[in-house]
Length: 479
Ligand code: BYC
Ligand code: FE
Ligand code: FE
Image 1 (cartoon, rainbow, N blue to C red):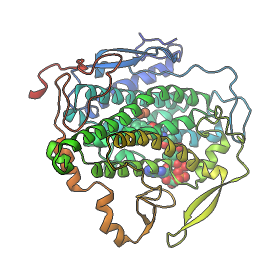
Image 2: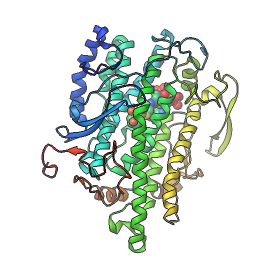
Image 3: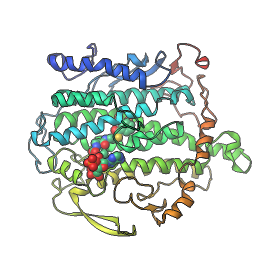
């Protein structure tokens, strides 16, 4: 049962744990202060057509209505626990899952939860200015939906910290509101979450590629032997699906619009009609895909091996995926490529447990490709001889075994000089960024849309595209 009337909506029986309730209620105003300071800039008084979780049942868990963002019902929701769940992998395979933190793994678990939690407010900070240039009210609403849910994901991790990690946990929860995306002295923990997201092409790439890392990481944590973490992540995944929908369909609508404009524009130059050229879109894809690959950590990782051995973090769908038969993974190797001392590609055998980041990333890569294939279908149907591609795993890496050398998007080794000469073909240039920025003009009239993106096939929750997804408190053009 979800207690929706409580100060903090929850289905964890918060009212029965007075101490915890008090601690979380003390954190709540700090969260709201952070939200007002660092959340969407300029839209806190407007009514947004948002969905709120009202149940944890897969059927009908969400309720839609216009609400002001600071009044959103951020709460703590865990997918109900299966009775007598057993640890599905690692050295403790088949033993009962833990309802409290195993003392031996306290540091590791805290670290995983803090790392996960940190990404959530980070993304809200990164997207803070985007509302001011939304291409339509529909997109504006989707942005805010993603933002409030990332806020709720922070609540999910803060709950675990407060409930299971005592004083350290409370301190970590406070720090979540202190670090700032992109801050020189006090940045967010992981690389991609310190990159600016100043335009909507980047936003759609981010929700396509970076939120999808969230899907895979949460999927791996949903297998955890620490049952409260597993159940928390399971519910987060239901919300995550919408974030990736926003990214995948946002990119699809951009590609579709570019195809339309290519037919109209002289010499297919869509820039004269305010469109986004395909080669520029490709550079943005290259950028966000590669920084998102970095989020999986090292290909050969002792941390990953420890997490797996201890039963803290499994593989994606470790329990449900019937193709996974060996849940101990002590034997066997993963055949991987690795750089020799010069950076030339050699082969390498990574012991299976140490390769868990790579295995997770492989599933991610396939999932990304499925989305990209849909964009490419639009290009093919339009008869346009261009396909969006995902760059090679070696391209533009800052983490892992490939990060000390340069490779092109096909994975060929390059000298530093060759890289410098060609990088402008592969990653967004200043000129690209200037051009994209020049297109970012808000369109706040219901049913209208910017030049560079097609409208969605359908609206949200059976509403039409011209529905008033955001009701402004005052005239948005005089802000
Ligand atoms: N940036 O053994 P290694 C989401 C560090 S997204 C900076 O190779 P490990 C969301 C690493 O911490 C999902 N540092 O990697 C999406 C380690 O540091 P130390 C987020 C990095 O530990 C959109 C060192 O490098 N969830 O939810 O196996 C919007 C060597 O580590 C990075 C999680 O990440 C990087 N990219 O794996 C909103 C799940 N990569 O020990 C939300 C929890 C690695 O030298 N996190 N390092 O100080 C984890 O499971 C692991 O920490 C990682 C790294 C998979 C991230
Ligand atoms: Fe999230
Ligand atoms: Fe997300």
